[in-house]
Length: 404
Image (cartoon, rainbow, N blue to C red; front, top):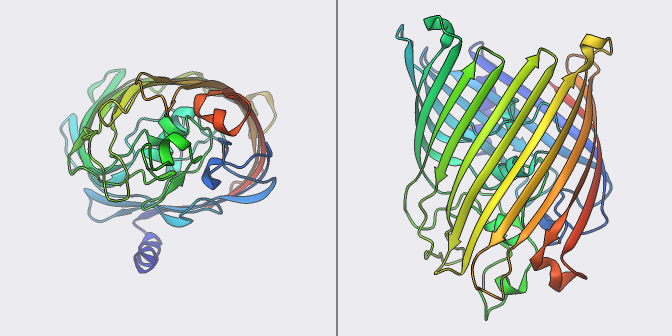
């Protein structure tokens, strides 16, 4: 992997490559509780107050031919089980054609274009330091190892105000998706899981005890367990450059009775996602996302529904003479509903979060950002570890980002 990464960096410096580097350090101040990555109950990313390496990222797109490109995103963190690896690695075939309806094929490891907020390079958010509950989960547990085929039409080419895209994909892996939603609940942070990564969570007695599920207090989100193919389909529609809606239906088609030698279970997970973006004026962006799904593990051992939604706004203050300053706010809601009768493994949780932040460009390559967030809710499987199921977590972050 190191040799391959070195070759990719070398190639990315060529004239046919679009390569970007980012380093982000943050000072964070949060609740004085152990976080989930260290097998604790806290839903936030870092354990202690102090300075952390939030992201060191290389994103490169290299033209192989006029129709074929190769994209890689390599990440480094100061936290988590795996500190250096890749989050995306794929080929894209986009043939040059005069036809108004154009095909595209992606092959490899990548994100579906589900997110309404993670629209910057490397699947980062241009507005927030922490992702919404929906996209924190997508960054943790969802990645495609397969192929996506799409057809698109640009309104400009056909003299219309409307553009559209339809797509479909088949893939392997992602068999364990929803483990975290069920056993840890939704969280809000910005760490993307890397390939061959491992995510820890609180060792809940109903999960880890030998006389219950006897599963580990961790998951490997891109592991293949049952050998079956999953799929998703989607559609995008946009009006000029001012409004867009995206719909996705995802089904990993996992055998919910499959289990591997590490006692890692397959979870049959399905969901619908709708995203909306609207630019009523150049400086203002409004965006929202809704996620509704369900998951099943075992013979009705875990049977959960899950829902989450957020609304957000970002306003660039340049128009009012405050330079390159952007203010952003977001409100999140989330819920996991426990439908099974497995008494020793309660999975119900619900909560809401509010995030407000500001980002200021210092130079074309350097920016500073500040963000405050409060996340509160109720999680039933916290009862063995604290007095009751309720939690409230506050987080303040100050970040310095260098982009080249």
